[in-house]
Length: 443
Image (cartoon, rainbow, N blue to C red):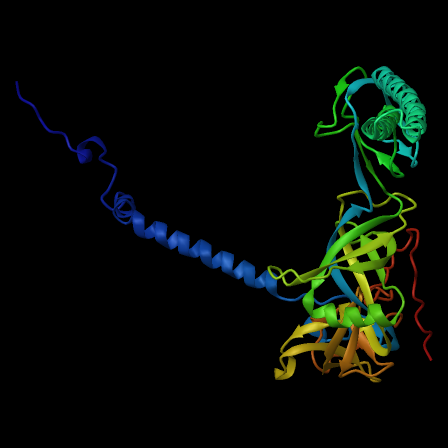
């Protein structure tokens, strides 16, 4: 049997060598083509990124950084005024009195006379312990006292008889001396009995438990019917005095000399308490006292401030932010803290502000800052009263850039006034709140 090898040319006689050439080329160079495709995609992405980064002119014709037109900003005027010098600190609310109410005698708890969370006053009834054992002990001590008082009275009568008989030489002197000693013995016994009676009376009063201070009671630690003893660790209930209440906080030791001078030579210093986020004021109070030593491990000293806490905003063991008003600086140059900028404009490293001159141009002005009080800051050097400083929009400014002040009009392709930074932008015509700027009629 004869076998023949049939080639592709014999099966597909119409397929030429030129038609098979590109396919063979792709199979041999597919890696190079893939790399070229990846490079082409990267170049397209780079071109699109550069195109998107190009600035787009706004309707007023302003270019980037105010190069083609004025930059809308918000401004504030540097003014002269008073500013408060404050010392910030972290504090913990601490009651003036925190009392664990415990029983003074052993017994069965008969009644609970308070409600958890109730505000009680000093002397109010809190609980009642079974008083029958104490009453029986008191009665027994009183009986012993009466018995010994009767023995003393009899001994005194015998002493009087013996004194008369001794004068008549009817009895020996030794018998008289023995009787006198017996009288003194009964007197001591009676004094002991009187002490035991008082002890029994005190124990009887301990069966009725009262509030030692005015405050708010916590959760009940003992239920009615339990046997209580003075050794109970948790006691019956805890009472915390809430009105007034104090806050203990620490300040750095660097403030101690000025603080002590102020305490010795002036009125009580004001203390403000804020919540954990330092945004909402909780209460105003007065500085009460300063600790007698500095903590060497932290370099701070503890202070205690007192608050009336009439609304109950301060709660025991609550974390608060404290602002201690140390002094008030008079006639200072004050501006908003938002106007302060940091960097190196014109080669000057440090803090600076953008000042708007009479020609509505921005000028870089290095400034020296002083005390900061919330959103305000004192300028000790570099600024004068009445100068305008930029508070918003300064990131688009440069030295000598034109400035569009709030309330000023700028020409716009839409025919509307552009809203400066910090103002409300006009709404679309036909919508509520829209404003149309009327063009000036031609001359």
